[in-house]
Image 1: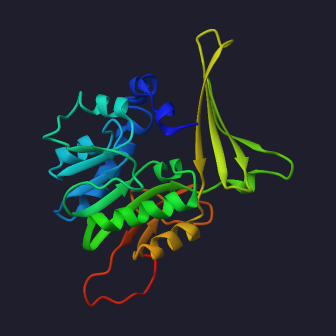
Image 2: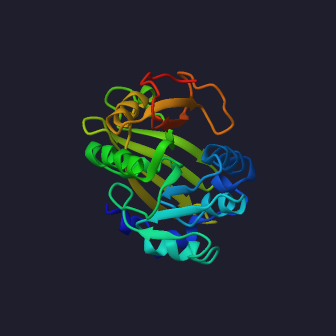
Length: 256
């Protein structure tokens, strides 16, 4: 499955869910608050900016935001909210595309780095982030923790969400660290369903840290969510902040 085929015009039209899901104020508010703090008065670059779920409210907070986006239909939806002057966007992939200028913050939200399906592409994404940042600049990643403890031997799938009208399940290829998310959305009769699928390469936190180190970053902090909750062995996801060293800074690696 090619990413441009997944994020086509139909997906772009259905992506936004104002006021609910990942657009709910209790989800989006803390995300924007934390990113505005981490931008530290400078410019921000969002890899895979999509329809502007985060970029639009972050720009409204006074943070200059530029985006990189592979899907033209998703960019088309963003343009219904903000023009090129408000949020400039470079069309291309997040592993190699260069946006003009220098930034204090590059960020990747909602598991998007896992859309890169090889380790080499994911490492290249870290290097690409580093190219855009000045000394002391930060790269922030929001990512889920693989749920392999829920996968008994001989079973290839887990149901991660079930509610009236919707079932979400993941199928795993543990040899390649690949997972395909399946989203079944039922019609009002409950007898027919629409299936949407998306492939991912899952990444353990320790592997993510090594990718960061290869690009010259150190781990500044890791929390379970955008509000700063403690990250534990039971956390289903994390928000990890990586930082480039400033001149004269040490090279110690730690979490806070």
